[in-house]
Image 1: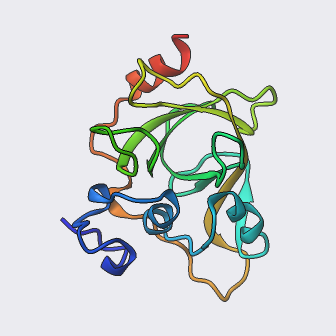
Image 2 (image 1 turned 180 degrees about the vertical axis):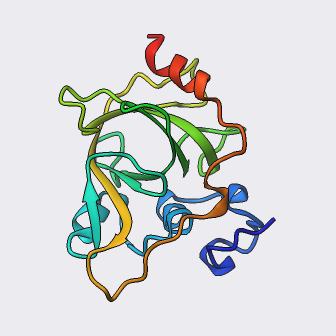
Image 3 (image 1 turned 60 degrees about the vertical axis):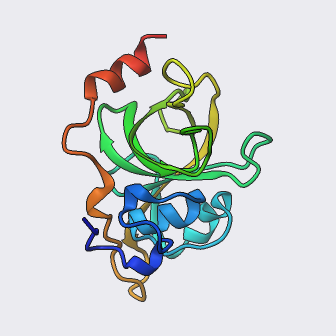
Length: 180
C-alpha cells in the first residue's frame, strides 16, 4: 500500500512503502513527516528557525533532532509516531538498528524516552534492536520541529499514513522505559 501524503519520488524506487525504505534517516524523516528540510540531520534544528515551529514537547508527526556527537557525527532525525506519556514516545525512523546485519532499515513505533533532568527532551534513550531493550546510550537532542510553518510560504506538513502501526505496544514501551 502506498502512502498518499508522500510522493513516490521521495523514496528510492525499490521502496514500495515507507516501511520498505532502506537508507539514511534524513530522506526518510522528510518523507515520513512532510517537513521539507535538507542537509545533515544535526543541521535541521537551525534550518527550521523561521520556517517551522519548534519546541520541547513531542507531538505526532514532529521530527526530533539529535545533536551531532562522536557516535552520531551527522546527528539523527526521527518522526514521532505516538506519544505514550510525558516522558515516553514512539518514533518511526530509519538507519538506527542493525536489522539482518545491516543498517538503514525503517523501524516503526520504536520506544524513545526522555531522560533529561528538566523533563525537556534534551537527553533521550532509544530502543536499539540488537540489545535487550532500551539502549544504554544517552543522546543529546535539540528538540522537536513541528509541521506547522512559521512563514506562509510553506504548506503545513502532512505526516505519512504509515507513520504508526495499528497496534503499537504501549505496554512494551513503558516497560522498556522504566524497567531499568
